Structure formats: structure tokens, C-alpha cells
Image 1 (cartoon, rainbow, N blue to C red):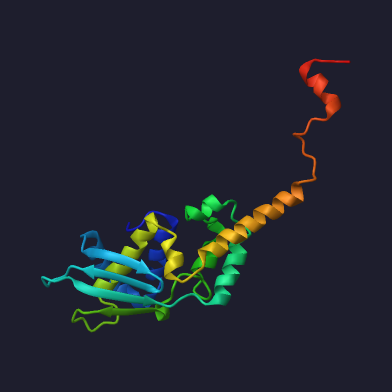
Image 2: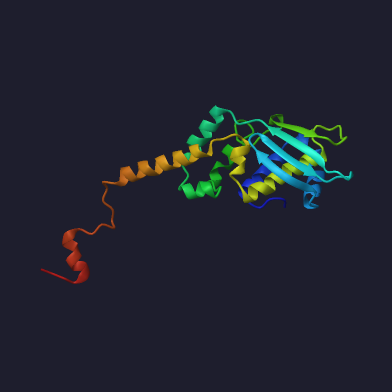
Length: 199
């Protein structure tokens, strides 16, 4: 298993569900497990790495990933932001599992499809995605295990919008409950009975 957390595993699962990638992913996994992926960097819409191969000098890999369009970003923020229980969950990269389909949907999800991923490697392999690029993509999954918020950076999403939505929802809930009595409130006339004090 390459990745362990929901984010890392979901990234890898998304890659593996596309037929166009399957003939190259096996070699990529082997390269990653052998420690050949070096200096992997994740930026907005961009992944860069160096991968040790058969040559003395590591290959240079650049993978461009299309940014998420604003409509999809807004829909996901609205849907997920209403269900996140706390800002701490977001900062830890924890999302309700029931949103897995929303995130992984091939039509409108936030994980990239093959047409949104563009490869550049200076090796001599004629294939669109060589084993060095495949290893780099798996390397992204490993990084997301440790730093899930890098995913938002990669897709050009405004993570602060999630934080704002979550804070707004919590404030709204607090205001709704502000005037309501709960079973925990002890009426003044009952306090004496609780402590054995009677008038």
C-alpha cells in the first residue's frame, strides 16, 4: 500500500481507476517504493520532482494539473462546509466519509481526471505518462498523507473559504440555540432540592 490516510489513498485510487494509466502505474509504484522519487514539490497547479533512473543524472519531471473551476469549487465548499463539525477537522484534513463520492466523482469531483493532467519528463520514453511521471504521481499521494492541505494548493482552491464557511455555520448554530432552554439548565426553584436545602 502506497498511502495510508483517506487523502493519500483517495488520490492513488483516483489514478488507478483510469484505464489509460494502468499500463504505467505498476512501474511507478516500484520506483517510488525503491526511493527513486527525489525532491518532490507541490505548487499551485504544478508538481515537480527528480526521479533516479538508469542514467547517472536524475530525470526532471514537471506535471501540470488544471486548476479547479470556480463553479465546482463553490459547489463543493457549500456542500462540505455545511457538514464539517469544526475548523480543527479542516486543519487536520479530515472530511466526512460520506463526501467521498462528491470528491471522487469523475464528473465534477475535485480529484483530477487524465485530461486535466499534463506530463513533461526529459527521459526518452515516448509514452505520454512514463514511469518517472507515474512514480511522481504516487509520490503526491504519499505527501498528502502527511500534508493533506497541499491538495487544495495543487488544485488552486481557496482553503480559507472552507474555514469561513465552517465558522459561519457554527456561529449560525450558536445564535439559533442562544435563546433555547436545555435539560441541563436548573430552574432557581429546583436548586434547593438538588443540594438538600429547603425554605
